[in-house]
Image: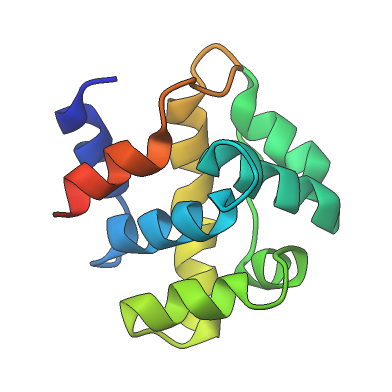
Length: 128
């Protein structure tokens, strides 16, 4: 994936800072879990959102998710850390993630496969 494509992807959403929020979330989720995308999706699956995650990585329609579902599924501390890094309240961060994450995951997994690139490196380049 070209750097500019990732930058456009992370910049989507109705709220400013969506790209920064996803970058913070991916970075925090990837610590010790392989790629950041794999780590985040694994945490959401473990939190009971496996069917929704499967819809985002599959080729059909993406299932919607709410901020409350995001907040409930993510491990304690991950949402708080991402929100803090973006200067947002956790509830606002969860809503922003719910709005942008399904589209981001869908576009990062066009063939239903998690990319082999180190996603956190690509995100870091775009956020500099």
